Length: 310
Image (tube, rainbow, N blue to C red; front, side, top):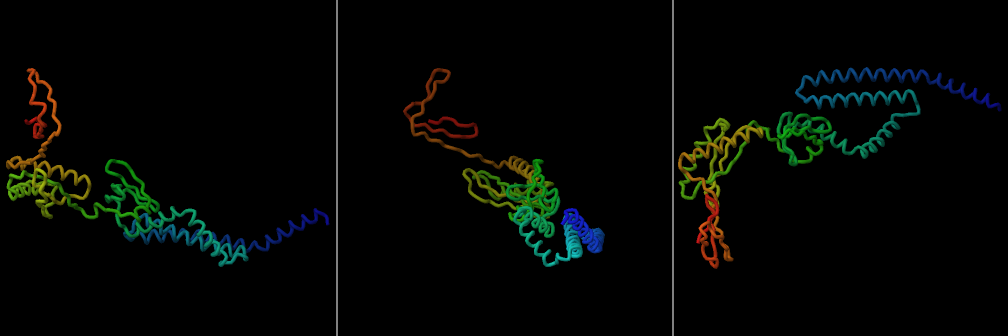
């Protein structure tokens, strides 16, 4: 047969098949247009309805996206079935299932962070502007997205943490309440009256502006230290890290001032050092040597520093 005739027959058959399937293609295109319209309407309805709730905007955007994806998947499946009758919904679902498995293995970390982000946004274990601590990273929550959470540390650095890490690791929410308890240790000399020292410390702490008045100041004699009776001073103040530092500064300064005014000693350690071997002493300016070289020497560490003792 003449090749030209074969080519003409193939072209004719192609146009005949195209004209035969043209109505189906037009219907499929109409379905896609309807799908586009429904996705826009569905997104607008979701935005209006979710805007009436207290749901986080990030979570609302995720729900809107999922609704739009669901509408488009349904529309594409219907359009493919109409345009290509051999493509059945069962085959499409099978293909989507196999594709989902392949995508899941290829993008495991991304999907893990995505799902963790949805759970964090839904459960709200912490909110924007909360101070949190996770795996040694402490700071203020600036932004929560589907994939990660942005934390501004107290030194100004910005840390981007994957949501899966925040979901797997324990997270301390430092500002879950508007107050936090903090503690400092204070020692007084063994020769001081313990009850009197406790009351002096209490009076120095209770009147400070950064110490909350609705919570009690607790002062306990905790231990016998090396050179002092150690008190544990506990009080409540603001929850932010800067509130803790400011309040500790005021408490330490006020307690030191109150103990000094009351004549109560805040001791420092004394050390007695014994040398087993003889200690050679240098001559002083008068040319006189120190004590005998053959005697063991002792040194006491006191307020003025080490001094030799015979």
